[in-house]
Amino acid sequence: MPSPFPGMDPFLEQPRLWPAFHNRLIVAIADTLAPSLRPNYYVEIETRTYADDGDGEVLIGIPDAAVMAKPDSAANEVVAATLTIPKPKRVSVPMPERVKERYLEVRDLATDEVITVVEVLSPKNKRMGEGRTAYLKKRQAILGSSTHLVEIDLLRAGRGMPLGGNAMLKTYGTLVSRSNQRPSAEVYDFDLQEPISSFNLPLRGEHGGVGVDLQAIVSGVYGRAGYDLRLDYTQIPPPPKLTPGDAD
Image (cartoon, rainbow, N blue to C red):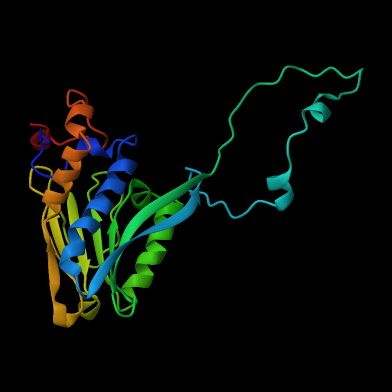
């Protein structure tokens, strides 16, 4: 069964589902692009890794001694005979999370030069913290280079990526930034009740670009993953709350 939504399904933003959906989508986009890129280009799946503790703090480093030391239970139990130890309260301490985010690089077959980077935004990219900081740093580096950028945002929640001017965009969108046209860029935006917009993936000038039917790719992932059987549409979707028009 297809999704009941004509375009992006907001129920896929659930934290338990999004990471796997993101990975499946990255692979599906790569597999869709690959035949059209031959014989001059190829697409590679890359991974960005960073540490995040969930509160926007960055794990800078841990001394080697702290990393290598093993707890000595016997030593911990040795106390002075005359000392009374009160019963402690059990609490939890924040642990850094090792985050891996996949993205695509379209490369020149002859030189391995990165021609186009394709990013699918994750929730951590759209909220304050190391995920957003790491992504924005990379984004700025791409925008200052001769590499094209395709940035796909299929998330309702969070803060969008910085854009110049006062453009009023719809809920979702794909940014296509061609290196030879910056600072001007193209945005293919759409709302919840609209199909996902297709876009043109830029290559080198003489090769033009490749049309990408993102709706077909997302629908394929939805079907192969069996989300129609796994999602409970009687529940409320993840925040933000749907508008009255979207909820109908």
